[in-house]
Amino acid sequence: MQNYKVVLEYIGAKYNGWQKQGNNKNTIQGKLENILAELSGEQVEIYGSGRTDKGVHAKCQVASFKLDKEMYCEFLRNYLNKYLLLT
Image 1 (cartoon, rainbow, N blue to C red):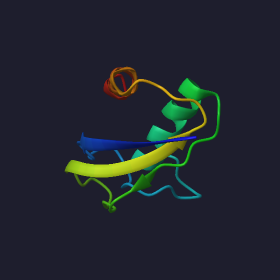
Image 2: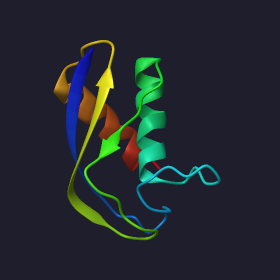
Image 3: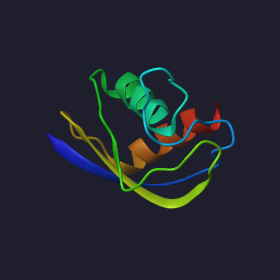
Image 4: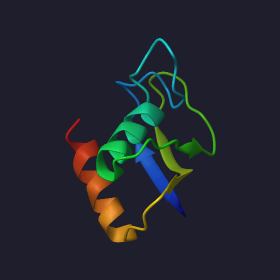
């Protein structure tokens, strides 16, 4: 199992904050976990270094996640950027 660190910057205007919420799927954490699950074919949980509220932007927020298979960091970065910029 490989542990990965990502440094994120996002505009939170259309999101309900960082943390997943049972009644709301429109969060940064939820979005990232869905994209990583599609990529890896496994359930992924991402842990943020902090949380933001609804509509709040972030620069240099650090998060980590684990994947069963090893992937090149450049590939992961490009994949995440591609799918995050489309939504």
